[in-house]
Length: 275
Figure 1 (cartoon, rainbow, N blue to C red):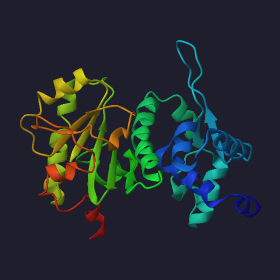
Figure 2 (figure 1 turned 60 degrees about the vertical axis):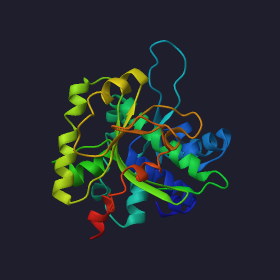
Figure 3 (figure 1 turned 180 degrees about the vertical axis):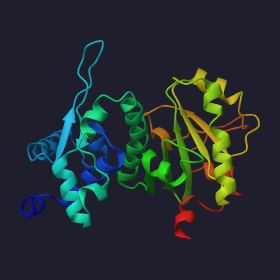
Figure 4 (figure 1 turned 180 degrees about the horizontal axis):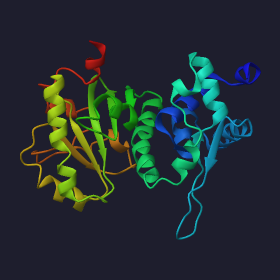
């Protein structure tokens, strides 16, 4: 195991860590996070796969075509991460049946959507001259451990761009839930804000303009800051001028500029853990 560990690069360990935290990433997402071109991405992932450090699957496509490889942390990769962090595989939180459970999960596409959101942010931050970075990206599992008795966001993020910064809870909406069920999530965020003394904006990332318009009709009176946008990877994606706070008529603003919509929010959810 020590010999194998020596063959891995720091970037390899970063890939393993991201797979552990966020469960599943596509080849394209890993490229946007850690590489520049597709060929080196596929080549390195192929090597890691031969070493049994990662495992992969391809989802079935009902109408033909070929889905990209979806990558998951393998048992050997978990052992290497545990060795690096000086913990056991069990303490790391890795489960041997992870690959099977993820590949057959009905929530896998939802997870990929959440991960698309954050890999798009990372990709923008990696561009030359970009004054941006993803300060935090916490998974649904990490959020559930911290706040699950009150609220269960799909992710927690902290984005910095051009001197502005905002932290937020992400609700990645795919249109499968009724809007009444979506709205029923907001009191939990209000309870969390009351319990921690920190109010964190909730961002709804929606699949269509119609879905967004219908949700916004219900957001007239909410107890926490909320903004909405429609899924897009065009331009600057979720970092771009696509966000509209609840109650506002426009224009839409960039993700980091949402901080100006709620200037009274002086602390972030991360502060709870730092105090």
